Image (cartoon, rainbow, N blue to C red):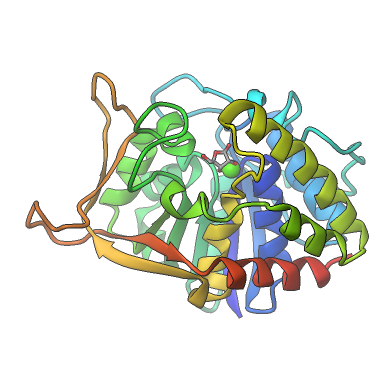
Length: 309
Ligand code: BDR
Ligand code: CA
């Protein structure tokens, strides 16, 4: 099993990312860390614990990290995730407290204590990972790879060319790309194919567990909001696609490329620039997701959800 830490900002799709990481037989979820993103840190930190509580996952520490980006004010997305970040279901109390360590302290201890390098999966603004690499560069060799949901090889979802996670903290992404740690970007160009169709919803609901029922309420709200905001009634479930890269590598095709993020553009801050046609003649510094086996992806999600309470 691949040991992983998930750094997230739940968020409806982040919850499914956590469940895929916790429930899939190929992964071992060692820790969860949270960041301000879709909603403020207070909510994401509570929601991550609620996601694990509903699924009956015990013994995985959850630690809070950065409240906002490295160099900008936090921009949130209540318009898609609701005021508390998990609009839709009635939320239970989390069954456990937040870990007293900060996100970066927790990740550092997990990396130092693991017998093998640990993969970091980030499904929000990548601030915590950037802080870790900035403050503890000695730990970089302990990171097996970083897989991040964010960016796009095509267009954006908050500005014409920027995806939300990249746009919220582009400086963090820039720092992570410069670190030399193997990095995979899973962007909108593939996650917009991971659509929650009525068939997908029915299949997940038919699992019939508490987790599946809670998930169905999340998806009902998420699809309704995606319809209202983007005209996409089959909402794209972005974040678990990043987890699927490690859970079942056959789900996602990736291409090595040079990747950069726009920090200054007058109209394009947060745009990710993937040199897929190798026009720049620069060495690849990343892999970028370019294809997805949609059927296989949903099968992986189904296997994981079915393994939980
Ligand atoms: C990303 O932004 C957030 O709203 C989602 O959770 C996902 O991580 C998609 O752009
Ligand atoms: Ca997210």
